[in-house]
Length: 74
Image (tube, rainbow, N blue to C red; front, top):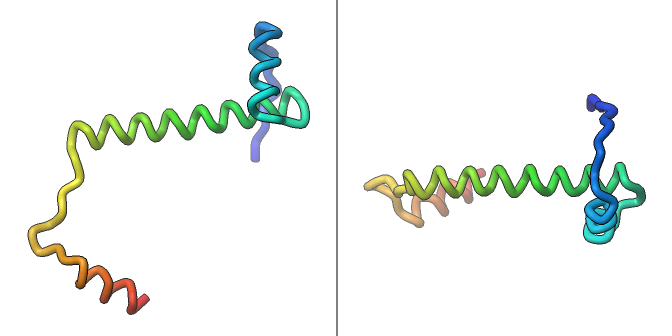
C-alpha cells in the first residue's frame, strides 16, 4: 500500500467531530476511516445515479429456477 504524507489546515471542531464519530485511535486513523467511508458512499451514490438512468432488467428467458440450478452446481 502506498502512503502519502499530507499537510492540511482543518478546523479543530471538524477534526474533533471526525474523531468522535469514527472512534479512531488518533487523527490519522480517524481521517483514514472518515475518508474511506466517504469514498464508499460516493461510489454507491454514483452507482445509484447510473441505475436510475438505466435500471437493471431481467433477460426475457430469466427464471429463478435456472439460477438455483446454476448455484447448486457451483
